[in-house]
Length: 598
Image (cartoon, rainbow, N blue to C red; front, side, top):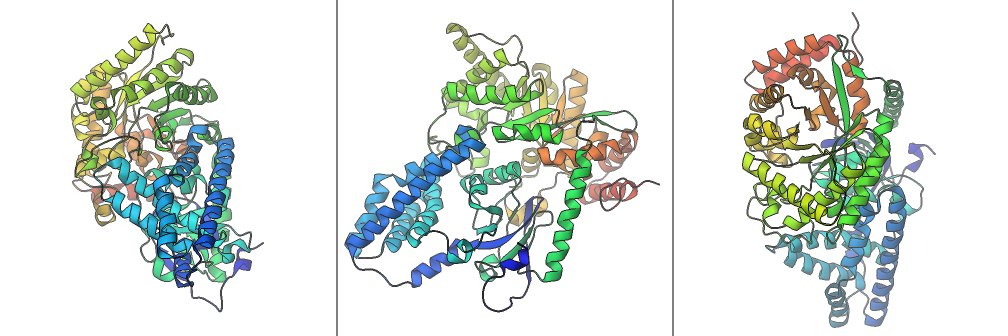
């Protein structure tokens, strides 16, 4: 069936193009699904006055939704590790909260309102109260409940709105903000893309969307006034364009673009098994950043030479309790064994700030990004971190490809404290008669300006380092990268950021310790010449980005990259640096990204 066959509604609609921030650079075609408009329809519906009937409707809808969550859990864990499917278990626990159910039933009985109105009013009441709490656990509970409200209302309504359920069309969800649960169940619900009013590069849902390669555009503010459920939509994740009710010519143009992109991907994957070596013999190691253990197959598919960064916090964020040592050991062992002899670098738990599991009892101050997070949890959650350390040590004793990297290290004192805690975990295993690894490299993330400035001292003690340019840029410039109002100030090419990277690489060269870079710029081929010129020889990125970056490496000369870097480092503004990079791109590559052969 062609996209044009999905025309919905009465009469022709004018094409509208909305703009937002692209997160996942893929195209998607589908019908708009907007739950807010369903809510408007429900509010216009007459109230039902029979409390017995409305309570029965609520009970049946609740039963259907909990059954659906159980089904989603079973389906999800066939496609990913069980720990990653736990989000559906967490949502069931929220629905089974006796206080929430009591409040809904009470409103049906006391007010004589419909089950729909009672659900909305009760959940709004709970969320309003929880959202004002000083406890992160309670605030997180509000988000979980609000995320389930529309699901429960849909069940009361009888499932998906007819405009969607009558077809077998793919769906593009228009939401206020994408949640991890939405992303995980996207494939199960025919969702091929998301458009959100808010969101940012580092939000956990966007990291998941990138991992699963689901097109996502955020910060699209106007869609509420323009998009109607059932509208035909083209989602351009490369430019951030959302084309609503495209003309036939626009639809054809995007279909042709999709075919060209597919041909390009096929061409790039032909180099999958080739090493990434510049024309003048400079070897570049390209590794993958992973969020899900189920992504292990993407390492092989993309030609990655290992995993430069595995974000381990998802095993915590998708649970309603702390994972056990045994559970973590099994997760890490399975991933290490899937990779064979390829390097696996696991980043230890990085939660706190705005990504805190609800069962963590953390008191956050006014500035959570600068508060109790990551390794700083040693002061309040030492055993939680040591449980993870013990699991990592047990896997390292069996698999020789493991490395451990600690995030958010600010000072030499913090580095020594976490190493001491790691040694304690080792002693705990020794006391239990567990086998210990003969060698387990320990490294740190360079993502705070203080760590970059102290890199010489830190690399005298660490085995390796990984530069996280996302946080390094944010903390150097004092810019929240998820805040649209200051997005223009988030500049990875700012001279201050480049100077910190240069200092780190100088310290690495002096110490003889390896350093990689795993921020967003590692996966952008436009920046590959600059990174090579700076002296980086290991880059870690989303696996989908590896084929294009490798193609860029194969057509570069390291000597030319070094000259570009010298020019960039002389600039005093990010705009000036970008002009040099764009000029280099224009000289050496054509518009399609292929090498410009002269």
